Image 1 (tube, rainbow, N blue to C red):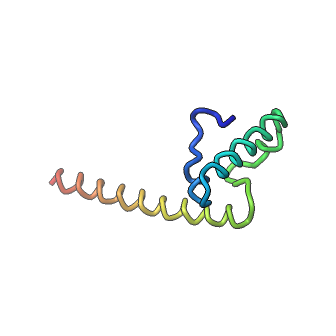
Image 2: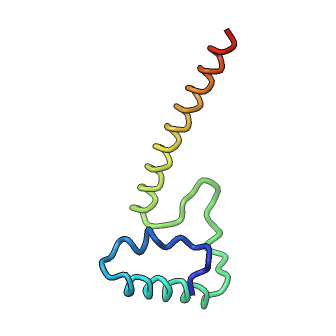
Image 3: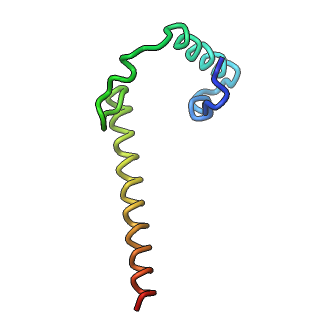
Length: 86
């Protein structure tokens, strides 16, 4: 059973047959529950991402783009605040 707060929509959008996808996700999550607590899933050092090389690369790329946007917004806010002080 998928935990109630799990967002499975991104996974489910990748295949054409919704019922098959939902069953596959439920089975995947259930198989993880059968393993119980696995300490190795928490072993990643700070700043490291657990996953395949492709997943890690894509995550780092998305994170960098998000960081650039945050910096740009912060600079815009600070500039606007500075202009109001004049």
